[in-house]
Length: 56
View 1: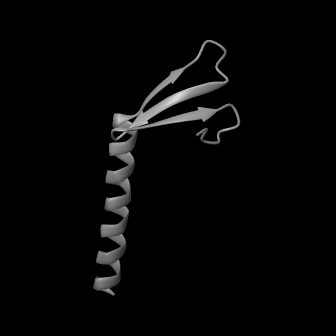
View 2 (view 1 turned 120 degrees about the vertical axis):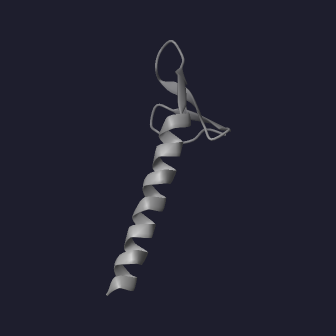
């Protein structure tokens, strides 16, 4: 039982750490109409349209 709790706690801490790192480094720049945005996080840049899908 201790092993299972240890595994679950480690997974939860890894998820929380990754989430915190992503949110802390996230920058969102919208255009004037706010129908698309450049999202930069962890050194990667994405262009996202109004519907939330990534535009290539």
